[in-house]
Length: 486
Ligand code: BES
Ligand code: MN
Ligand code: ZN
Image (cartoon, rainbow, N blue to C red):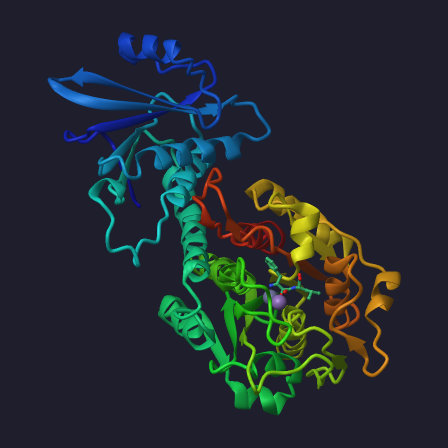
C-alpha cells in the first residue's frame, strides 16, 4: 500500500473514509449517510464500519466510516490501528484502487494517525505470488491511500511506523514462503538482498566455519538434510560507538520433520514456519535499520533443516556444543534448543551483548498453555522481563511470563552427558527454556520468547489475515525504542 499525504481530496476520489470516535459522526456528513449510519446501528466502536453512497458534485462517492471507539480509552492506539485495519480488510479486493482518508474533522493526533495508517498497511499485506488463477474479484485492487487533513507531525510519525510495517511484512514473507523456497542458504540470500545499501552489516557462517567453532549441536540437527546449515548475523550500529549491543537470537528451522523422531503427517506442512523466530529477528532488524534506530543491535539466526536420512542424527547420540557442554539427543524433534544453544553461545562470545532476547517456535506445549493469545516469556532478569511485557502490551505482541527454577532445571540432567534435550512430558516449555538458560553466561540479562502459538494464524485478526502474523517484530522494535534509545 502506497501511503501519501495531500492538502485536498483528489478530484478523482471514489472512496472517502472517515475515522469516527464513538457516538461522534462527522458534522459535514450528508444527512442520508448520517441517518443510514444510525439505522445500521453504527456507533463508532473500534473496528466497526459503515458505508453508504452519495452524490458529490455530480459524481457517485462511496463513503466509509470506521470506528475508533472512545477517545479517552487506555487502548486508544490499538483502537486507531483497528480502525485503519478494518478499512483495509473491507476494501482490499473491493475493486477500489485508492482510498482517501479524510481526517479533517477527526481530531486524531499525529501518533493516532500513525496507528491508523499502521493498521491500514499491516492489514493490506498479501502474498499471492503462487496464485495464478485468481479471478479479478479475488485480486488486490486497493494499492494506495491518500491522507487529507492530518495533524502536524503525522507524516514524521508515519515514517517511523512505516519502517515497522516493512519489518513485519518481511517477516510475514519469510514465514509464508514454503520450505522448498526458503531454506538456510536462501534465507540468507533474501536477507542480503533486503539489507543491501541499508548500512547493516551481514556476517554468514557456513558449515566449515561452524565446524571450526565446534557447533556440534546445531550441525547435528542439519546433518540429515541436503540443504547446508548457516548462521547469519545482522548488525546495526546506530548507537554510541563502543556501547554493547542488544542481541536478538532466532530459531530458524526452515523445515522441521522431527528428524528420525519423525512427526506424524497431519499438519506437518505447518513446520515450514518453524523459522518464525528467525523471521521475527530479521524483520525486527529491518524495522530498526529502516527507521535508523539510535541503538546498537545485532540479530543472529541459526538456520537448519531437520530431516530424517541415512546421515541424520539418532536418538541417543551425544553431541558437543560450542560451549563445550555435551548433550544426549533423546528426541531429534527437540531440535530448536540444539540450534539455539550454539547460536546463543556464539552470540555472547562474538558480540558481548548487554542483553539477549531469543525468539523461537520452540514447543507445542506453549500452545497448550497459552493458546494463540500470548507468547511465553521466560527470563533470568525481572527488569528485562517487565520491559518486554510492557513493550508487548503497547504494541499488541502480547507476552505472558512463565517460571524458571532449579527444580525444573534438574529434569534435563542426563545419565551419560551434561544434559539431555528433553525432559518429562509435563512442563515441556519450561524444561526447553531451562535448557537454553544453561548456555547463558552469568550476569547477562536474557529473555526467551516461545512464540510457537503466535507466528501463524488460522483465522484473521485485527491487523493480519489468516497466515503469517509477523509476531515479534513490533515488541522487539518497541523494546529498543523505549529501553535502549531513551
Ligand atoms: N517446532 C516444534 C514445536 C512446535 C510444534 C511449534 C507445533 C509449533 C507448532 C519443536 O521443534 C518440537 O517439535 N518440539 C517438540 C518437543 C518435544 C519433542 C519435547 C514438541 O513440542 O512436541
Ligand atoms: Mn521439532
Ligand atoms: Zn522445531
